[in-house]
Every structure is written in structure tokens, then in C-alpha cells.
Image (cartoon, rainbow, N blue to C red; front, side, top):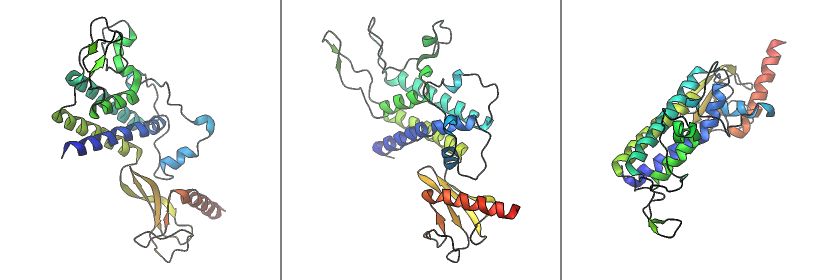
Length: 264
């Protein structure tokens, strides 16, 4: 694999982790979700006062977890945080130039944790800023940001803050973040998979419904009957009726109405 491709895949994985992190925090605080409805759609139907504000949330590795409702999601969150924090430590040890004695603190630097320190900032280092900061920081090193010569406040020349990321380390970063991304997506049910919708048949023809998910696509549902199904949605490339993202609320409504008719 060439360097440019490795950079692209690594950055994409880091951004995927950041984008899905709020979903994982929601998953930790809710019981394990069934296959249906799709996780993304279930969260859009939450009441406004139940929305989780991710800002200023302490990192999982720095919190107590007396009663998580989804232990698997918590385990994944802890594993992903530890992997990204350790990765940042490794990268910083290789490419981050030492700070000049007496120089003011630079927020762009990765600070190592010092468990023996009394001061909480030193004790946790940059880990205290959470997973988002770690992802953004590692992405900056992958993109070779801040590797040009700089100036001190007095105008004198200063060495770059970071050295360019060497190829051998780039491939280790890529491997680590892709493993972390895969575990996070798998825990959320957002990895590429096709799953039968349990205990529910197509309201129009009684065919088997199947949920299709993927990390780069919105969930969609297909009916196994094919063109003979009378559902008011188009056919996919395989001739199945398909409910795309914008049609799923209508499908959920139709399924609920069908269940009510059966109950009566």
C-alpha cells in the first residue's frame, strides 16, 4: 500500500470514530438495542430532554461506571479510548520535539499522563481532553501538520513542533485506528451486515424483511417477495422492494399498525 492511500484510510477511520462516539456514549446508557428499529432511527425518536450532550463529558477511562446499561458498549468504549491514547503516546514519543525550557505551554502538544502527579492536569495529561482530542491530534500527525519551522514570540527562529510521521509508524497508526473503528462499528451494529428483521413481516405482502447496514451508508430494509410486493417503494438492483432511509419511518408506522390489527 502506498503512503497516500494509508494516509487517506487512516484519516477516514479517525473521523469515523469521532462521528460515532456520541452514538457509543448513548449505547452505554441504554439497554442493548434490538435489531429493529435501526439504531440511528431509534435515537432520532428520543425525546428532546433525553438527548445526550457529549460536550464536557469526562473520558470513559477517567470515570466511574457503577451501573452501565450496556456493558458491551462500555467495554468497547474503554478499549477504543485506551488504544487511541496509547497510540498518541507512541506517536508523540517519535515525532514530538521536546519543549524549550521555560517556553509557555503549547496546546498543540500531546502531554503524557503522570499518575504520580498531584496536579490533575499533569496526572492525566492530554487524556483529560478525551477521545475527540486524541483523534484530532493523531490526525494532525498523519497529515504532517506543524512540521515547518516556526518563530518564538521574540521573533527568533524555532524548530518545528513535530517531525514528519515516518512510513513505518504511519502503517502502525493505520492498523490501530482501523481495528478500533471496526470494533466500534460492530458494537453499534453499523458494520456491513444484512440481518432479518425479527418477528416482523412485510405489512403489504407478508414477505421477510431484511435490514442492511454499513459504516458509510444509511440503513435500508428490503422485502424478500420481490416485484410482486405492493409496498409503495421502488425496487433495488436485485428486484426487491426497498425502504431507503427517508422511507423507514413510514415502514415503522405500517408495522406498528399491523401489530395493532393483530392484537385486536
